[in-house]
Amino acid sequence: VGALAARSLAAVRVLESHGLDYCCQGRASLEAACRALNLDPAALLREIEEAEAARPEPGVDWTTAPVRDLVQHIINTHHAYLRHELPALEARLHKVVQAHRERHGGMLLELARTFLGLKAELEAHLAKEEEVLFPVAISYEESLARGESLEPVMFGTVQNPIRCMETEHEHAGAALARIRQLTNGFTPPPDACVTFRSLYAGLAELERDLHLHIHLENNILFPRTIQLEGI
Ligand SMILES: [Fe+2]
Ligand SMILES: [Fe+2]
Image (cartoon, rainbow, N blue to C red; front, side, top):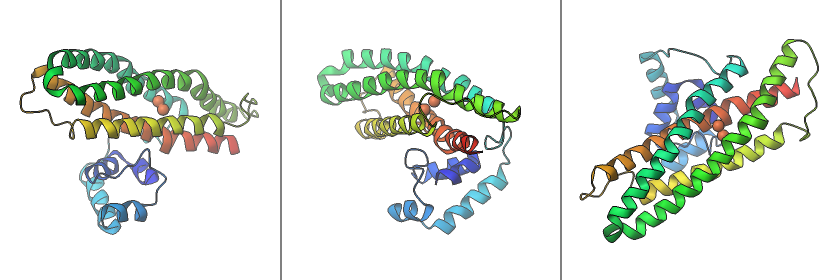
């Protein structure tokens, strides 16, 4: 499923619309993922082809663009988004907890606990990627382009930090699923005020952005880095 999602953004949208997890469970085969949701794999592939034909993708094919550009794109788009949005969401959540503790206290406290755990993990995760893994991916590509052999890395093989990042992605995926469940699919209660609504809208956007972000790493950047190491 991950490889299918790596084809195009149109494929990502179709998979999303059917609730197929293409990032954290991206290793599942299309057949297995479809069976679990009672979908027909052939019909799904047709739908993706139609979506791709209807809207040819502008922009970059990250499966072939330079790794340096892909890394820059992840940092400038998705890491920058998280660094800006996570504190903003925390502030909004804090306000909502203060104002609606009486009627929605139990759910809101569990939501706050889950969100704050996710936020702390993600902040550490972004730093590890930017300081450890991404520079190695770029240096592999550039050493090979210069015809040099790869600098040995202190963690033996790049597969070790990659495995660690993938485990953290699974944690993030589980926290997002819990948030979706707690917020009833990001549907605010009927008595919700504007802040409550904007909190839910922001959490829905966080889920979308993080899924796309993890997809670029798990399904494109990490396999490409492992492949470079093997050349
Ligand atoms: Fe990342
Ligand atoms: Fe990541």
